[in-house]
Image 1: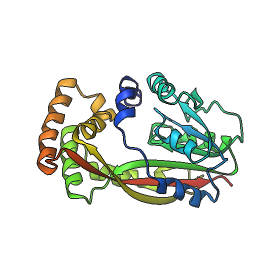
Image 2: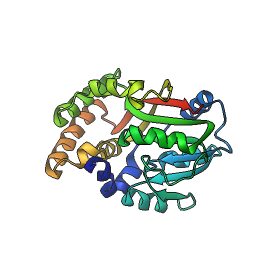
Image 3: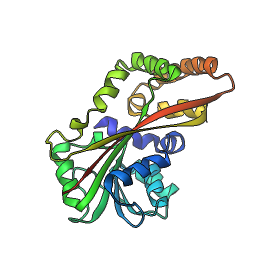
Image 4: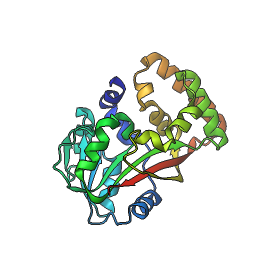
Length: 249
């Protein structure tokens, strides 16, 4: 669980530099769920600093954020004081039965124990309600993105491409088979400074748990690589959002 808790010490960095999500993502959630987010009661679990929560509210949802981390909750309240948030997690939601039209997890479902979080989602959802899970993933068919992913993978000792393939396996979202997920991918991009791009990388749990001297040295080497590809100092990050949506019978 140390990886999950690592974000609390870097909540401001996370809020300032992590990518958001495109409008097409929320259009697709509505399409797969068969209902609008506008006016819907939404529980956004693992809300972090509120990146997705704010976008759900902008779509007209009546949204409640649920977040286990003290540091992330404090940053959420600082940045979004008008939105409600409670402490809790997806394995034991602090919400009564059949309260939600949607339960959403942005970059957070993988921190849950599906043996507990699946029954909890089914308990809290109303009949016909939808569970929506999504993750921003690197678009590895973009040459510079793939090269950067290889460098990061070597540094962390992971096969980034294999991890992405594993993450795209729908059945792993609910090994019990109780939920039938529809799957979509939505491509989008954002243009940011190299500093923002590097701060985004550094806000991921694997880097937060890396000794600071090693992390700093790697990010400075990465800056040199990026300046060769982007001499104007602006990076075009390209993402594929993996979206999974399942409806409660």
